Image 1 (cartoon, rainbow, N blue to C red):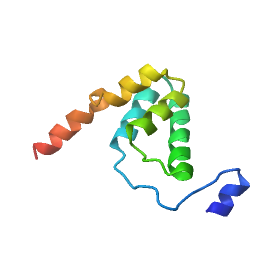
Image 2 (image 1 turned 90 degrees about the vertical axis):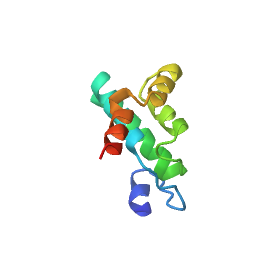
Image 3 (image 1 turned 30 degrees about the vertical axis):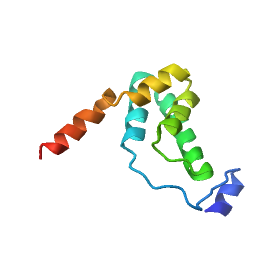
Length: 101
């Protein structure tokens, strides 16, 4: 995989990135796609891939998600509000419905 990445100028670092739940990353991407455009979501996704696969960043930590949102042309303030608002696209609603089972 690393050799294939090199051909396209990508540097993969598989040496210890943390595996994490990605609900918040999906929530942010869905919000960007629906509120802005698929291109915004794609830009954020590219940032998330770069941060996770090349820099060993936690895939759904607040700093990682904020950086991804800023890569999608959101301001720092907009990015922080989106990442910190778990109600956008049902983050809390889904959690509550799971607890009712």
